[in-house]
Image (cartoon, rainbow, N blue to C red; front, side, top):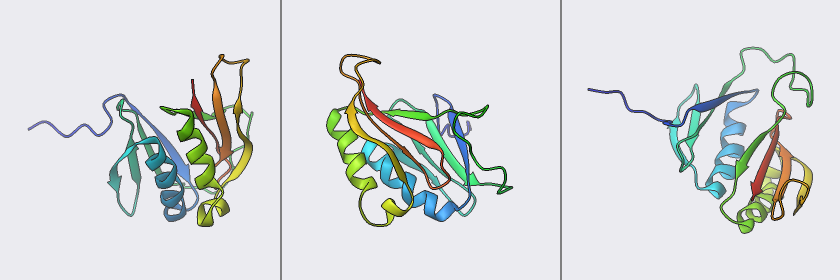
Length: 137
């Protein structure tokens, strides 16, 4: 019997300082994007996009060093939205309740025509400061 492939297009793993809070944060964002949850355990959580890309979170083994934007390593992760409305929905969710406490909005939704004529995006961080983007283009 073949093992179940949870993320047929590959995956990205993010180490997080607080798994439970990060599950709430990423779960909310990924619901807006139409991702399906494929793993939820005490040691990790994972979601997969319609195209098969998996995003996994797991507890960080070390709390230092923290993520530093534009240092060598990960710059940011962009998740593609199917419509501009999804960009706005993510922004709205980032501004309500507990999710607001777990994120920092860097740039609210707007058009970035320097990237593409219809490029519409919101930029924000997760609770560990990892830069994220949701963009329609």
